[in-house]
Image (tube, rainbow, N blue to C red; front, side):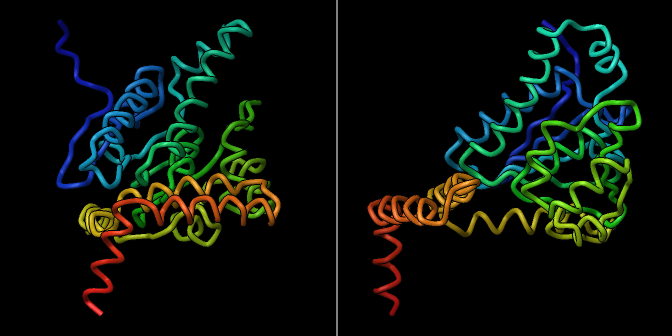
Length: 256
């Protein structure tokens, strides 16, 4: 038995599950425990049919400052096989965020840096408090934000991605929105309420339809136009045959 406080907290309210990184004294820095608990809780939320959206946020002043000192020390002394295993665990987290059925929303207050910026970017949607700051400072220490490059390149233009990844620059919430990293920026004082209102909108739409749309959107990465249309055709037919869609059409026709 252990009485240790979880490094990721789980709460649900209606159809919204909230996963809170819970190392505020370490600015919610990523370590093995946080990554593993995030993966476990993402599965938990996705397996709950009542959940319509997942919000990932941070306790305290910051969202996530990246890898902690212990993790960096581990990297510096690890073997090739150890480093592959460590990196693969983060890869699994980023992949899982895209593969779960429901939308995953990053709610960013304060700093989202390095792996923390990567975690936010990996989410389907990013909501930022006006005081939020984003950046990839890895090149300062000779490291490469390698896996998050695949994510960032799909979020922003090539020129913006190059700028963010190689200049070790921090940008504020409004600049991040202009770059394409952030969907919405909310005032600091009303941030939690605004995030709740935004996320709750997914309670008014069909879970299965949103899940099919999410899967299709990411499936289209790298496909030629004709193959992308063919993938859309497949999902179109699948959606038509679902019970939810047939009931929704019946309700619409009855109302008309």
